[in-house]
Each structure stands twice: as C-alpha cells, then as structure tokens.
Image (cartoon, rainbow, N blue to C red):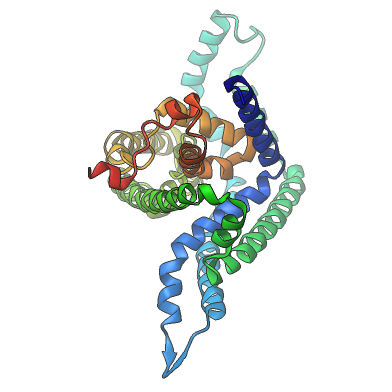
Length: 372
C-alpha cells in the first residue's frame, strides 16, 4: 500500500470517526462524564467494599449505589445552595427603583449618547436613556414569566434525563472496572494491545492529575475572590465566590458567568439604596476583584498546576474549546480539554506512523519518559 493511499484512508477514517462522534455527541458526553466520575469514585468504592460484619462485606452493587447517591447529593446540594437565593433575588427585581437608577446614570448616559451620535452610531432623535429603560422593562415584563417557566421545565427535563443516563452508565463502570477494558481487548488487534495498555495507563494518570489540579485551582480561586469581595464589602461574598469558583472550570467564559452572577446578586441585594452612590461603586470594585482573581489564576495558579497536564499550545487549546462549545455547549467546553488530551494520547499510540500525528503529539511525554 502506497503512502498516498494510506494517508487517504487515514483521513477518511478520521472524518468517519468525527462524523459518528458528532451524531452521537450526547451519548459520548454521558460516557465521558460517567468515566470521569467512576475514576473519582473508585477510591470511595474501595473503602465501602471493605465495610462489613465479620466475613460479610458490602457487595459492590450496594457500594456503587451509595457512591452514586453521594454524587447525586452533591448535585442536589448545588441546586439547594443556589436556586433558592436566585428565586428570591429575582422577586426583588420588581422592587427596583428604575427612575432612581435612571437619575443616577443620567450624566454618564448623556455623555455616551453624545459620543454615539457624534460618530453616527445613534440617531439624533433617539434617547439612550429611554432605550435602556424600555429594554429593561421589556426584559422583566411579567408576560415573559411563562416563557421562562417553560424554559426552566424543559431544562430540568433534560437535566433529569442526563443524570439518569450518566448514573446508569456509572453504576456498571463502578461495579465492573474491567467492563470497558474487556470490551476494548476484544476490539483492539492483538498486535496493538501493548499500545492500548500504554494509552489507558497514561490517560488514567493524566485525567487524575488534571482533575486534581482543577479542584485545587477552583479552591484557590474561590478563596482569593472571597477575600477580595469581603474587603470591598460585598453583600454575599461567600455565595458569589463559591459560584465563581465553580464556573471557573468552564474555560474562558466561566469567569464572565461568575461575574454576571455576582453583579446580579449585588444589585438585587441592595434594593432601595442609591444606585450611583452605593450600588455602582460596589459593582466596579467587584469587577476589579474578579479581574485580580482571574489574573492571579491565569498567570500564577494555572501555569503551576497545569504545566505538565495538557502539554498543548494555548492557541490549540483555545480552538479545541471553541469547537467543543459550538458542538456541545457549556458541557462540551468543560470536557473539551481532558477529552482532547486523551485523544492525543490515543493518536500517539495508534496513529504514530502519520507525520502530522507525530508533530501534533511530539510534546506528549509519559511519566516514565521524564525520569529517564
């Protein structure tokens, strides 16, 4: 077989795998999430199966159910922690004094309006203040409540279906650690079993190191942000910092989501206060707290924690996250980096004869290789 034919067949195979992956993206995401949770839950499974009375030990099935219930309890705790305050804050929105907010912003809005009109970005007969107030009133129009409720119901339905699917897959991954390995050993050619063992060993090591680093990163970010919010006198520093730390796992847009949440909590917790003298300065200080926390995270924490976890160019990671976000939304962005890292290891083991694969994976080094 000529090199040209091999390249063509290799390219067609990659395109076929990508096409199938796109069509089955939701299922792949469920499997990946379940596999990651199984990796995290294995130490707990080992401890639970050691529990017993005399010679009787807790069966793996019960241990797996307990492990899954603990994960579900963490998810439920997340919703209990954030949903009630969000519902309460939304109810405060109706109490906002829009006239007072408008009066406090009249001078800066007038300057912005003059700037936009000067450069032809806003018609001369348009009033920026009226446009903003109309949009705010339209956004919080009670007529849209039914639409929000329907959207929330649909979202809850999708979340329930996803949780059930992941829990079902997770149960079997926990009770039978060799389930995937046994299947793959039947599929992988005999002469490639060594490559398969190398890939699974390195991927397991890589994911363990990555998610451990991710947990440490989120904890450090939460602590730094909490200190900053506490210093500026934020209304709910712990809630905002904790949510910001959770959202920080979403590449690039996570900190922005955390900041918007913090601004929303701050504004709705300060109903009745003067907007320009009290609320606006606090929001600006909050923006500074988020910015400083993010800079510390980007320039100190992340390089130190993830310096050996990904081994990929920042532009490469950015494009991968962007594509994953387009295909799989926020969930796709969260799993993009570990999934891409695992795929690079698989490519190095099984497609190393292609020069393009060699160049893309030349910076991947196994732990034993670094010690040589």
